[in-house]
Amino acid sequence: MMSAPRAATALIFILVNAAAAASDWIVIKNRSQLGFVATYDGVGFTARFENFDAGIRFDPKQLETGRFDVVVDISSVNSDSADRDQGMLEPEWFDMKQFPKARFVSTDLRRTGAGTFAVAGRLTIKNITRDFVLPFEWSESVTGARLQGKADTRRTDFEIGTGDWKTDPIIGFEVKILVDLYLERKH
Amino acid sequence: MTLRNSDHSWGGIAKVLHWLIAAMILGMFVLGWIAVNYPMSPTKIKLFTWHKSFGITILMLALLRMAWRFLDPPPASSAHAPVWERQLARTSHALLYLAMIAMPVSGWIINSAANFPLKLFGLIRLPDIVPADKTLQTQAEFVHLSLFWILVALLILHVGAALWHHIVRRDDILTRMLPGTTRGAKEPVE
Image (cartoon, rainbow over all chains, first blue to last red):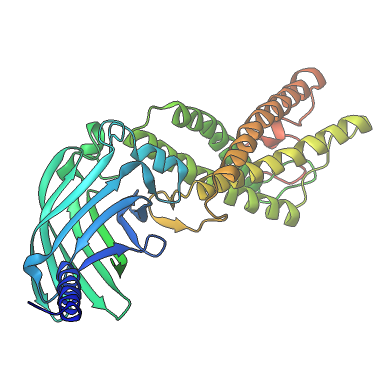
């Protein structure tokens, strides 16, 4: 039988270890950005999603335990243009009424260099699911971490821009997804 | 026809600027109206690109025209016209110049406030003149549309007055602005 103090110490040790192993992170919303860069008439514009939920479990030393699950509220898109933001929700674009959420669920995490990683997963937009890889940089401090990544995709892969928009380059086909998350440890 | 104005007739530069801007304003009425009412599509964006590009061109031509008018004084107004007529002519011409400036500027404000890019004929990127602001955009749209109706009224007055001069008064106010006409010109024809 262990003495009470020793049992308590062991329990604390287990709890602390379990918490550390989990490596769950909370997104600091007001500093983080999740969005994309696209082009309008050949000129780039940046859009951000104001609302998203990111479940992030990540430990650079234990990649096999990592898991990303990000759900984005499409209606929260903001490109500093009320008309364009409204337009993006229309059926030909994100079709927000039918598909209010986009989601990314990771399937694999790997290290690609010093402080750089890549998360592979399934990205679902407008109910179309595709394999998606986000290379990212990870920097960690005592208090938190920062995850910065970008990846190229094509809007047509997710049927964003149907009808005439599908073949017309006035809204560019190439879209760069931008992720810049400031994180703090979940206690 | 000389390039400069004479006492009695408009010169070539003033005539070219007058008719070029006149044609573009009429074209813009049509283009703007179609663009606004066109269903959302790539074509709508292209119609607006042309509308914006011609609008900025009119702005530049109007500024050029005002500078030229300053450098090259216009021919005398009709000698026997009563004072109120001359004042009406002067005021309506001033308002036409004002509209030629205010119309494109208010359009530029709409575009900047809406945070849409402005590329002159798809080539030259022009800066935003106000920050993105939905309220300002709505206000500028109201001004732009109001100016459209004011400009329509001014043009009816302008064309009506020119025809009245020609048909009723039988003077040279209209003909001295027509291409190639030199009636009343003191200087010899080239």
